[in-house]
Image (cartoon, rainbow, N blue to C red; front, side):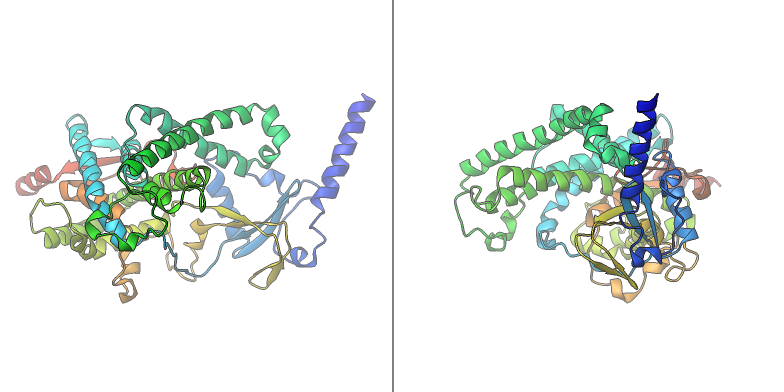
Length: 448
C-alpha cells in the first residue's frame, strides 16, 4: 500500500514539474487560456475522433485567434486566425500535370460507370468508399506508374488504418510516449500497417527502376524534365524521382520511398475528401447546381467528349464551387508544427519546445474574413484575382464527369453532420447522395 502511495506521489511530482516547464514563461502566462493545476487541459481532450472538431471549435469560439494549453508535458498554442498564403508546388509544373489528363479522365469515367450500375439498384449511394477507391487508383497510376492489382485491398486498408493511428495519437498525447504505446500493444499494429505500405512502395520502386534502366532512361546525370519532348513527358512522379536520384548520390531508395508514400498517402485522402464534400455541398444547393449545369452545357454544348485543358479552364464557376467547399471542409482540418527556436505569432514570442496547432477549419470560418461563415456560397471566389489559375484540375475532372451524367441530391442536413477525423475530415457514417441520371431528370421535368 505504502509503495503505491509513494509511486503516486512521485508520479504527481514529476507531472507537476513537467507541467510547469513553460507555465512560468511570461509570454505564455499572458496568453488566453483556461488550465487546471497539474492536469492542465486533460479533461478538455476530445473523447473520440468524432468529438475532435466540436471540441476544438468550442475552444476557438471561447478564445478566438490564439490560446494556450497543456496536457501532461505537452504544451500547445492553438492558432485559429491567419492570412491567405500562396502554396508553391515547384515539383509539379502544369505542363507535366497536363500529360496526366487522360488518366484522370479514365478513372473518372470508371467512377461514372460504377455509379450508373449502382443507381440501377438504388438511386441513393454512399459515395465515400467509391470516390476513395477511384482516387487511390488514379494517384497510384500517376504517382507510381502502376495499378494496385491484387494487393489493392490490403494497401487500401493500411492507408485508412494508418490515418486512424495518427489521429489517435493527436487526441491521446500519452500514446506518443514509446513505452506506453508499446505496452498498450499498439506499436506492433503500427509496424504491421507500415510494413504493408512500405513493402508495396519498395517493390514498385525496384520494379520501376529496372524498367527505366531497360528503357534507357537512367544514367544521364544531366537529366532535366524540361529538356524532354512534350509528347514524352508523361512520366510518373516515381519515375521523375528515380531519374533525378543519380543512383543514390542525390536520393536513396528509402528517400524516394518516403517521398512517394507522402504523396500517395496524403494525395489520396485529401482528394477523396475534397471530391466527396464538393458533391455534398452541390447536392444540397440546387441553385448552385443549376449554375454549374448551365456552365457544363455552355462548355461542352451537348458533346460527350473528354474534357481538354481548355474545357477545364473554362469551368470557372465549378472551380468556385470546389474552392468554397474546401473553405468549409478543408481536407486537412488540423495540423501542428513544433517550435525549435523562438517564433513570433501575432504579438507573442512563442518559446522553443511548444506545439503550434493550426486549425484551418476555424480559420476558414473567421467572420472577419468570411461573412456568414457557415453558409455555402461559391460567389466568394468569383473575383478576377482567380483568373488564369489552373488548380484542382484533377478534382474538377471527376466532379464534372459526375455532374455531366447525374443530378445530385441529398437529405443530409449540414447542421446534423457528425464529423470523424482521420488524416482528413470525413463524415461519421455513410455520406448518402442521390444520383438522378440526366436523361431521367429531363423526363421528370417534361412530365412534371
